[in-house]
Image (cartoon, rainbow, N blue to C red):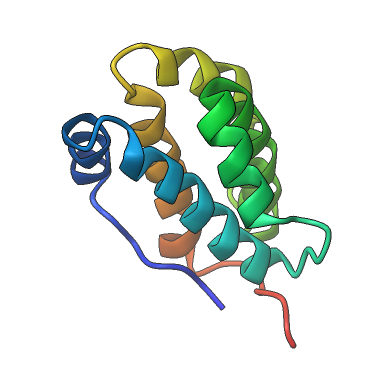
Length: 118
């Protein structure tokens, strides 16, 4: 099951306008979609959102590894763990959320790989 392709700029603007309340929701949403795609039962989106509320850069760092795993499953060449970049960029006007959505969109648009079956 693939997730929804979203406009990265819209995600970024929603994070800015909502004083990062949308950022917490984004962390939950991204982890839920990736959990369903990867079939990872050990990934807890609610806990990740709580971690994001306490320390967004750490949550984004963890999200980077999950995005890399999804990109590898989708067959995207040279999938890299961009967790450190996402963590740093999340502290710079929330740009990490924009970049994270752009990377997740690559998975949803790839058409390659096989999502988890239930």
